[in-house]
Image (cartoon, rainbow, N blue to C red; front, side, top):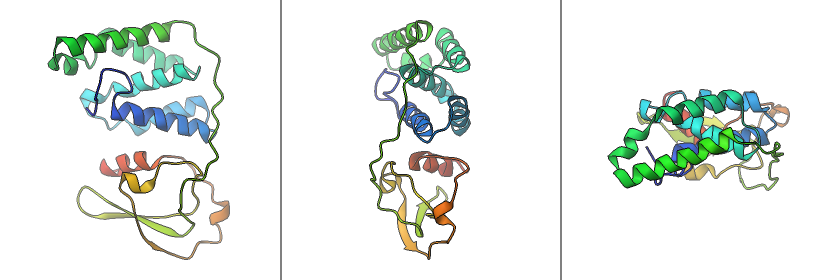
Length: 199
C-alpha cells in the first residue's frame, strides 16, 4: 500500500494525490477540473487503494478551504463503511485503533465548519535545468523506452532524475516551443505512474 503510518498522508499514493491537486491549482486550473483530473489520474489503483484518492483529496481540499461536496460525500462514505480498514486490522489491534482515530478526526474536520478558500500560488523558483529541445527517456516495465522532447517546462517541479527519467540527447528546438500551450498538466511522478500502468 506504500503506507508507513496511520495518518492520511503517511502514504505514498495520498502524498502524490495531494501534490498533484495542489500543482494543478498552482497552474490556474479551477477546483472542479483539478478534482476531476486527479480522480481520473488515479482510476488505475487496485481495489485495496481505490478509496485513497477520496480521503486524500478531502483532507487536502479541506486544508485549503476548498472542500467539494462530491469529494466530501465520497470520503464520508469510505469512512463510515470502514473501507480499507481490513489492511490495518492485519497489522494488529493497535494499528487499527490508530487508523480509526485518524479517520474519526478527518470525519469531524469534513463535517465541521470549513475555513475560507486559501489562495494557491506557484513558487516562482526555477529548480530545473531542462531546456527546450532536451530529450528524456523513461524505461517502461517491459524494458522498452518512452522518449519525450522538452518544449517548455514549468518553473517549479520535482527533479525529473529522482523519479527515473534520464537525459539522453538534444534536438534543435522548434520555432513554436516558446508559444506552446499545454492541454493538461502533470508532474514527473504522475507521468511515471501513468507510464508504468500502460497509459
